[in-house]
Image 1 (cartoon, rainbow, N blue to C red):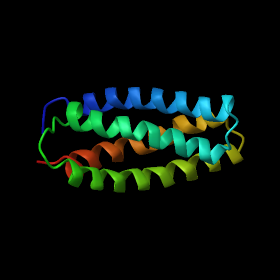
Image 2: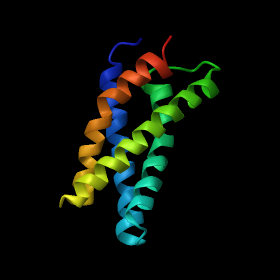
Image 3: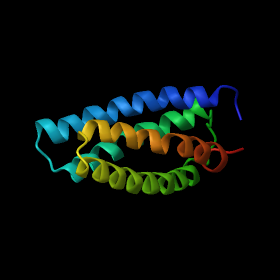
Length: 124
């Protein structure tokens, strides 16, 4: 695995979170989409960016295994999605703002997402 992949993972993660928050704000605050649908649309929108950037920049994969990697990434996204929806709903129900709850959910999925990506999705 390439040197500094954890740092690059974090950098891509920051950009993904910015995209996720922009989409969440647009769907929830501007367009008035319901909470769970807004979370879903923003989550999957940023996940597309996330996959390609982690593949090319974080883990330096340019081989022809993109479809196999994408299938494994989808598994990660499905698990992450349910953790995100569950944690945000619990936190919002307990009085937290949706955007702060989203931040906490990002922190929850960050570490296992890196390990899953490094050792399962984009491993050598």
